[in-house]
Structures are given as C-alpha cells and as structure tokens.
Length: 460
Image (cartoon, rainbow, N blue to C red; front, side):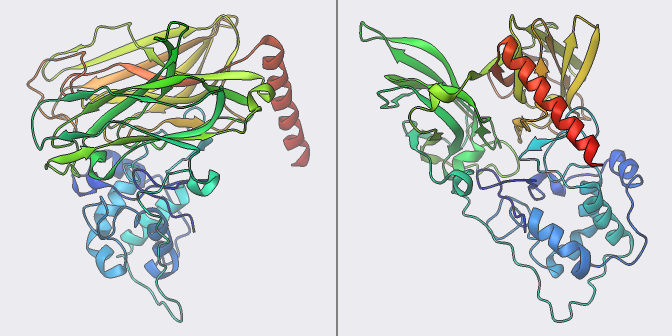
C-alpha cells in the first residue's frame, strides 16, 4: 500500500497524488497520442483484479468525502461513470498532478507522484475493454489507509517537528485584491542548528488562499538590531516540503527571527477555493533539526535561493506568448539538490540545463511541460544522481508563458500581462537548493558515483 496525501500530508517513497480538481475539465489530443504508446499484455483487465488497488493507493486520498477532488472514487459504483475521463487524464499525465516530463533529464526524484507506464496502461486498457468490475471472489474492496490531512508531511519519517513557527493570524476576506502579510516571529534558538527537513503548512481552508509564503532569516547584531541572514524556505500552493541531504547543513542561526512574506488571494485560487472569509488565517513552519553538534560533522553548507530569469523581458501581449531565461554560475563546484520553477497563471513550462564551458556541452536536467500554478512542486533529486556542477559551469533556466485561450489556467487572454507580484501579473524565477562543495569534495563525489556505477555493471 502506498497511499499518499493531498496538499499537506505524509508522502514517502514513490509518492503519487490522486486525481485533483482539474479532472472534470476537457480532454486534449495529447492524451490520445500518449495513450496509444502505452500497452500491457492484451489479456482481460478488471477493476477487482488490476485497477482497484491503483486507484485506492493514488486517488482516494483526494477523491473521498471531504477531499479536494470533485468526485468520490472510493468504490466501483462511484468510479465507473468517470472511467473514460480517468483514462484520458492519466494517459495525458495530467493526473496525478505532478508536472515533470518523462524520459527527459533526471528521473530519480524524492516524493515523485507520477504513475508508472504500467499503471497507466492498466487503467487505459481497462477502460478500453468496457471498464468491467470483475469477480471479487472472497476478497473485499481495498480500503485506503488515509492519514490525517492536518498531519505534517514528514511526521511518519522523522516524528513531530522539533519546532513550529506560526505567523501572526490574519483575516482573509471572501473577495478583493491581493494581500501581503509580513509579520515577524522569533526562533528562540541560542545556538546554531542544522535543519534536517522543513515544511510550510497553511492551516485549514487557508491552503487555497495562500499563494505563497516565503520566509527570510534575520540575526541580531551587537547593537540589538537585526541583519539579513538569508532564506529559510519557500512555500507556494501545493508544495510538499524539503528534505536536506545527509552530511550537509542548512543553518538555522542562533538569535534569529523569521521575516514572513505571505501573499494571500481573497476567495482563493483553483476549483477548491472556498470563496468565504477565512478568519484567523495562520501559516506554520515545521522544522526538523539535527541533533546538537551535527554542524561539526557536516562538511558542506546548503542554501535555498531565488534565481532570477532576467534575460528576456516579461511582457506578454494579449493572445500571445513569451519566454525568459537566466544564467547562473559559481566560483566553486556545487551540487543541485532541488529545482522548483515559479510563475503565476500564464506560465506553462520550465526547464533546467547545465552548460559546461570546458567541453561546450549542454546537459538537460529537468523539463516541466505542463506546469500549473495550483501545484508548485520542489523536485528533490535523489542524492546519488543530484547534478554536480564544476567551477564555472552554468545553470541555464528557461520558462515559457501562454496568454492565449489555449492555456486552461488563463483567466483572460485579452489582458496585457507584465512582471509583478499580483496573482494577475507574472513572475519569472526558480527556487534552487544548492550544496556548496570544494574541489576535493567534488572529486570525491565523482569517484563515489563512478565506483557505484562499476559495481552495478559488475553485478549484471
């Protein structure tokens, strides 16, 4: 059983979130093209024998009574009327809602919600055969072991957070213009600590009205004032959280406070928007800390930063498109631990590449071709494949924007769209977690990976 949780709940291993709210909308030609490329053995496929477990483990988490999905999918009677639409959505990989292209760049990700090719083929062939229920025999319908939707995502893995930092409560009206809330909260730490994992969690219905919630750190200086220290973490709608790789330290400094920057959209975004007043809205940061003394064991530091895409003016004409790109290099070797593109309602795609000046080669790392602002995913690379960038290597980040009627997320293609902080504006940057290496560490990691590769070849 690998049941996963919508929005802010436990997911581990090969996570796959259930069909979300967009499942009721139209069908694309892409679905037809992709479904024809998937196949399994041509034998009979039934709900009882093949499909029930897939849907129970991957879909019921959202599609249940009180869930964010627009229909319930907890038994055959509920699922059968939706079978053709389910087939279309999984074939096009629009559901589960994890936009990360197959077969392009690094595919080994932590918290990967995607169905396998075999699972997709099972569903599409079942529907093509008329979606039969099959014979249950002595078996009963599988029951989803659903976690509490208010539980911390990493609670099963790490226990409860070491500390929880709440923003000041604020009422969000049912309608109106974008709001920004910027309270401060003290961490209470008296010594530097290393972060193991971190999650930002809007409380209750606030999930649909919190567009993003960034948090910066400030450290008390000798005069009793505060100086900027750096980013703590970033949250945007649908984000799971962050896990730091072993052996590195993202520092939570002593005598520090968090400066919140919370962007709120009255009424909410997406089909689950409550459209009502949200009283005493609070956003929480759950932080899991390594034991005291871990900083002395950690050889390298990690940070999360905003990397801008400033090459290409972000002005999107009515019924038009645009592209931006950014280039970033380092004066020391680094490892890229995660990649999270950011935009608003007109953004449609993003990519990450690495250019190696010494060879003139460009390597594709990640491609997201069906991006949506309602699901901001931080793609966490598995540690043994996280891209290594030598000194002088260049990160090449690209994002594409679609202000036409073909973009299902576009509220109005007649508007000029420019860069800005409002939901109706656009943004062009990516959040990237970087471990900063030295030359010796870089060579050691390369050697370890080559050794692991040789062992794998020898065992075949």
